[in-house]
Length: 189
Image 1 (cartoon, rainbow, N blue to C red):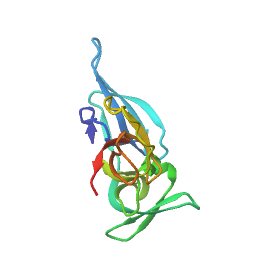
Image 2 (cartoon, rainbow, N blue to C red):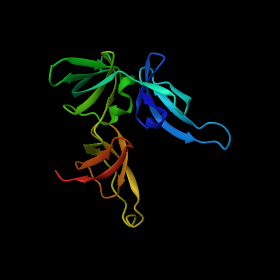
Image 3 (tube, rainbow, N blue to C red):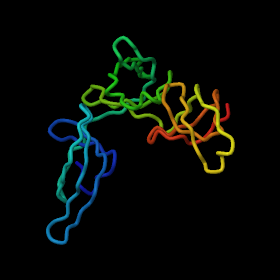
């Protein structure tokens, strides 16, 4: 069992027999009365977001979730599913696009990701913090605009558009932070 002092971003708890992840939290100690923790939690099954307040000392049940390392195989355009394979048991799992969410912007074939399961049912994926993607479309940089640190939108191999410095051109590899969706650096091939 967790206590309110254990609350942190990303912690998975179970409320009303459903798994939730804490998105953000704030410890509040009013001048009068007992301290409490104000949280914003996301339902890991349907994605709804709730604001919830926990009194200090309240016990929280840990969510019964398991993370398995799986390999992304392919996206089936027919049913819109994303197919993953467990590297140890070779078991395959298909996830709907709404479960994958924004991770579609960074998924490339054979990428290893963590798939979260709740009671043997997939509920979402966690990507590595950084991915390397190839630039497939980049407008030419304008001369004289390099001093200000200006950026331009470039399209990477997954179809995602990211702002990158003016010197980036087509065919180059970029390191992108999957948590923020921002350009980090160029990668030499």
